[in-house]
Length: 87
Image (cartoon, rainbow, N blue to C red; front, side, top):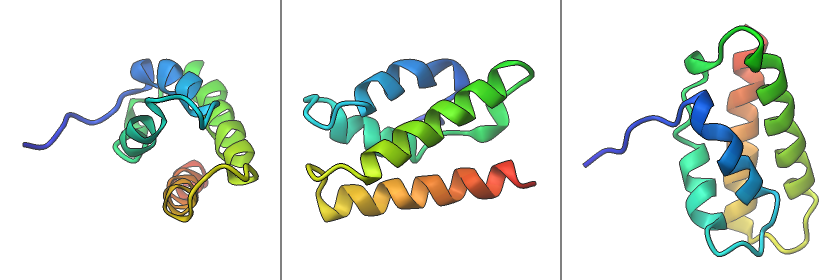
């Protein structure tokens, strides 16, 4: 059963979890981030949320506590979001 796409409204709590790799829900949040639907970004929230995502991903990419698999997922998510923002 496929899960529903992650929307912009659901993103802030997920980003809070992703700020701390030691959070017990970190891996689940990381997996959920790959399901984010960027078409749900609208109006005033879009620049703020994209900046938050970028900041969290950049910070985590520099973290020494991440596994290789987690880092690969972060890089993939960041590339996907970067390609969306350049459209």
